[in-house]
Image (cartoon, rainbow, N blue to C red; front, side):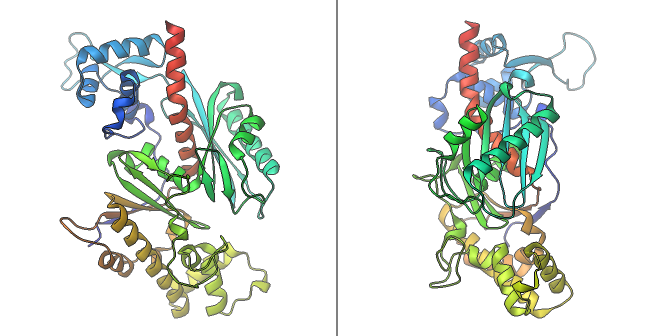
Length: 429
């Protein structure tokens, strides 16, 4: 069997202060190039609170080295000592001491621009959720200037709820659907923008007056899993998102894989049918053209004789289609069954290519359980290579809209941390 299918239906509980955020498993050998003080800081933030001895054990270095690094971090105001819980506490003697990140050492924002709702969150330096906000999105493509105006308005709403000024932010993570070159800050194409090949990162930085880090929305939900979700405890995993399109994010050795041009892992645009259905990217036969919202709407219009001219909104039509399937309508069930089979093939290909520890299915459309019904999972298992262990487990996460923005904030936090540590340490010395 494909490991168990686990449903998760609520937002992650915000306990970063106690449980930490970020990858729990060490990254080897890449950490060798990271200064020890940042390795110590990352270990403290990942575990929430940790003793010096435990940090030394986790990093495989001497306790003296950790003590020297933590002395610098405490002097810089980014780490503090807190009282640690005792095992079998008798109340005698000096209380045990643990290290924790100072939440007020800095703040970042995550902004996710989308088809239906734009969302934003503010996180503190420990990864704790400070505030959140959401505003409706236009139901059509908009120009970059209009997009940035909406991003700025949303950011200000979130900051107002946090009681913070824009000037305190160390950076902003910005995400949107489409083909995004994160390294160069380019939007090659997006279904929510009228312009292609646009340098959105630099334009956003000028518009907001802050450092901006740009990425594809599927990568952002993957970062959210890596920093706050089940991806924290594994080194290699894939996230497949099913919303208005099909996205994918891939983590290898605790590091997000983007490809040489920043547009790797575009699972939705892998081809499953030669000269097949038209995809919104302009090509034919893409996986997305058989599984995404607009694909199901197209099939419903044909199989159930629902005309687009009837004026039914796509979201309403999808709900009607799902209700028809649940009521026993064979045509409606066959639409979801066909989409599920294509999805199974796509996920099996991911497993065969990358051999992840776990595959996480995420996004609003995971409410449609026909897409991961038992027969679909069985088909996935039959298409995936089995060698010395079972096929990786598949988990279903329906976090909600804010998870995308939290991933954007994680991107900003990851990018801002080295500069923040360097600046504060230089100031302290």
